[in-house]
Image 1 (tube, rainbow, N blue to C red):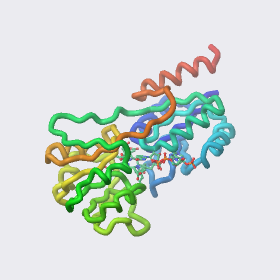
Image 2 (tube, protein in one colour):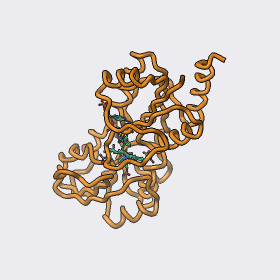
Image 3 (cartoon, rainbow, N blue to C red):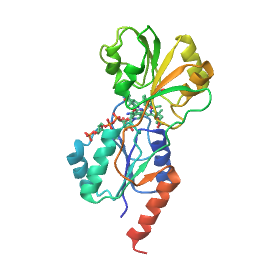
Image 4 (cartoon, rainbow, N blue to C red):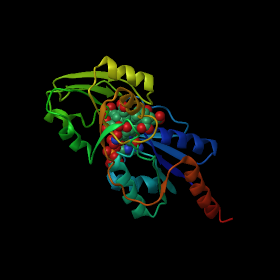
Length: 251
Ligand code: 3Y8
Ligand code: NAP
């Protein structure tokens, strides 16, 4: 009896949830619980960590999960690594739904850095006005360059003092559009953008706006993730499931 665990938190995961729901596949959607009010999903939903690999192994067994779809964000490396370890340990089929990284186009002024940790060193020393489009978890990395004014776009209001002396905060949940992001960059006189190479359309608008304004972008490369079973779109995941469903039914 097929039962799917969908590790979510991205626009692809939300599309995947619709496809599973429409195909009446027995599934459960999982959020980490990073935000106060995540977008509701058309599947039974659990929220919160599993408790590391041990917790995830116990969950897979307790819930009789037969397949795991890792549709988490390319930078959610911890979850992806845990999913790979737990599925290997329990011999549970795992597929990662992953969108392609962004590629520079003519007119782009991008500086690639290997990790977000390296992004701060790529900022100039002279005072700048930096749009940190990286959420809230890693803002502390930029305390090394307190001289800049930082524009922060967060999903929820910060619960504690920010680790940077000069900040403006906008509260917004993507997906974002070009007009919005052009206005944001202009209104805040932004001189530099720092972002993760998330790929996908939900976070892409700021890069298009930067190209139009001729602004430099510092882009962090994705972490390396384990596992070779990767799908680039929802259809490929559904085919993978159908294939196993036939096998599971033994027809
Ligand atoms: C909790 C679920 C959907 C999912 C939408 C996508 C698109 C909008 C763009 C910018 C970049 C950033 C951030 C971002 C985007 C989508 C997608 C995406 C980037 C929600 C969501 C959860 C999260 C967690 C959140 C992180 C933060 C990262 C903000 C829901 C809205 C910067 C990543 O405040 C915090 O603590 C935010 C934490 C992890 C990165 C970070 O490290 O701070 N995402 N984002 C998920 C969970 O609990 O499991 O609340 O509804 C989902 C989406 N965020 O269904 O359409 O697919 O990428 N999310 C990045 O890309 O760099 C914003 O501002 O330009
Ligand atoms: P992470 O660093 O990879 O994972 C840290 C821990 O959070 C995991 O070990 C796990 O806790 C828990 N976790 C993460 N995703 C989970 C999920 N979908 N369901 C249940 N537990 C989860 O994760 P992150 O980068 O903070 O991302 C958290 C969530 O935000 C993910 O759903 C991700 O898709 C979404 N998101 C992240 C980014 C980003 O830039 N990182 C961008 C957009 C969306 P336990 O060890 O206790 O199991």
